[in-house]
Image (cartoon, chains in turn yellow, green):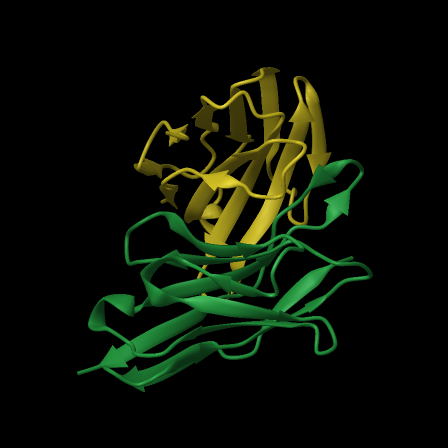
Length: 112
Length: 115
């Protein structure tokens, strides 16, 4: 069965902390994505990666960075967390040949 | 850029009555389109997908959607709502950009089902 695993379901961090959100997929997919979900706004793309060490900015990359050192792992980094980054974060992966993406369960991040 | 518009932020129906959730897309070519459902405190679940085969697509739990190119629509329907259908629904288009398909989400429609 297809699996995208996010390391934490819930996280609480303090303003100014450096935060790492981790995502691992077991399907050998080329593409991986990070989205942010907020009520009334749907899911908005932060960054995506189409290969190891390759990344592209999405619609809302400000305040975030990413790392993809291995094909199966894609990390989202908040260099200095702020309260406006309190949100649900979802990771996804897909094959480069197919439009369907597979999603993790999400990490609900609260920045206090 | 391709995008999707979900025409209703909330839809309220009575149990046993039909459901219609509306989605319009913008695309310069035949797109790949999806509907996902998200129940409270749960992850996204794929309901159905259109990838240029049959225009009427059947999904899980009795849902279906019809791709209408002339109207650039991909509305989700169900003949009879059940209480368990209460959830957030997302219409998604996946355009090809630089060699990769990039899922682009609508803002979501909250389906409320009354007993």
